[in-house]
Image (tube, rainbow, N blue to C red):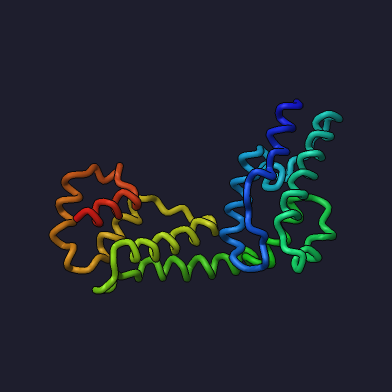
Length: 194
């Protein structure tokens, strides 16, 4: 137990930028990762409660630890919005609702990102690195809203949206690599090497 407690209290060694009201998508991904690494995300996400005394006490301790982490990483100007929350799930949902939106708004945002993704086309003077930054930014934002895009679909979209100067390279990449094992990052490397 002491070892587990020490592993969850070593949080101070991890740097997270304080959430100031902008970029909730990226901040929430970082917070989820840290809370998962400390075995605390299940408390926020599932709103875990227990019926036995020891389990209940442990669940309350974890919830309080979650609350402390989230509160610590929210800017003072935003803190008043979550100050009245009693549980970590309530705190998370308050921030998520205000800065990411309700499910209907998320659906609208996601639809716009899908449309942008499908309409991406590499510009003639654009480098592969810059183009992949745009693709991966869109992909990251979609995934932060819960979209699950398989790598294969991303690769197909990228290959179809390249400038004609890459037309001779695409068949050689497809022949030399198993399409199931190519990731977007590997594809970027292959294209840059050409």
